[in-house]
Length: 115
Image (cartoon, rainbow, N blue to C red; front, side):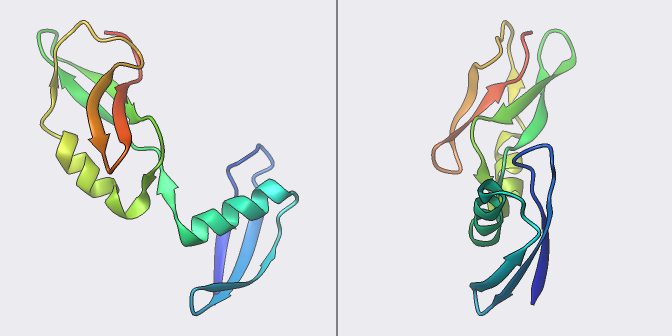
């Protein structure tokens, strides 16, 4: 099977083709650097994303942008969204404040802005 992967490690955005079978990588083409190779391998075996969302802020009826402080396994993103869905933030909040600790193991949900 062939899987198309676009590298996001650097601005070149290499489009790579990863040939695999039975959970093993057979070949990789299209990467222009070693970082692209490492990205494709990680994306194939352990895909993860930084979770970004917004939380409701009490008292000012607005939304606060938040994110995870490290990538979360892709298959756990919706579980994590459900976990933080009901959080109501009470100001003051500063960029980097931990609003939910230990989500999906060792990640934290942190404020992306001051409020």
